[in-house]
Length: 304
Image 1 (tube, rainbow, N blue to C red):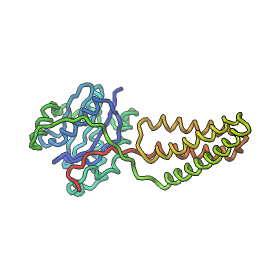
Image 2: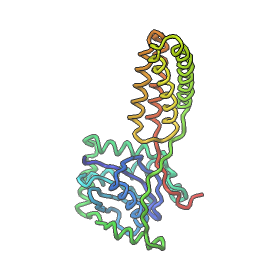
Image 3: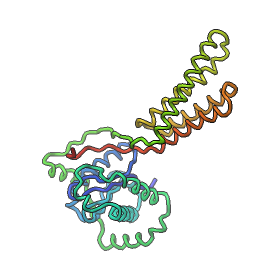
Image 4: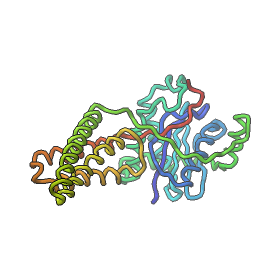
């Protein structure tokens, strides 16, 4: 699919990342392209304001303006004029919302973390709409690219130069990306408390019913399972909210369906209001898990 996959804003003089989109394309080509983008960001002063580098089925585009540069990874089939229009709009958004003096003073990466949301919105608009509102910009960018085509950068040369700048040859070590979650919200804490309460209620009812079932009525084993499965699901929902896990959407969906079906199965042992309460808590927890964004950790470039 032809689209923008990743975008970031960096400081031109040293390549310090200021903000980036949170994208989790874990295929090897994309991860390799991310590493090469990082190498390229450290030596942007050696290139003109606009440039493009090809990496298999992906392309890296960059647009420098003043102290900052906007960089993006796109599929190779994504039109270059659209990519540079996207970067131009991103640069304008950053310049209007972030103080230029602060850019020069920051020493830690991702100091403008809140700008991630803007990157995602602009990227989504360019990926999933016809961008009719950017028609004028497209014509302007197209004319600028015709008069001054972007520099064609060889990523291998960029990596060699980056190694020379750092005083050593560049060594690439394949590492899996690490992630951290955004801070928990008040509603998120509420969902955790309600989940723990629902889990405890399910466990207590399940244990009591198990004692009776094993002694008197073995046909009630299904009810025991219908209590204990939501108990496990509640605490797994707490875990998914607190910690990053791959395939979160699928896991949350399975857990929500488990809680819902088990509570519906228990109709008779629970009244309709109790069932709706447990399903509502699972729904709230699911929403909090999926709305809590993940931020990709990056190496600290000398920050304390």
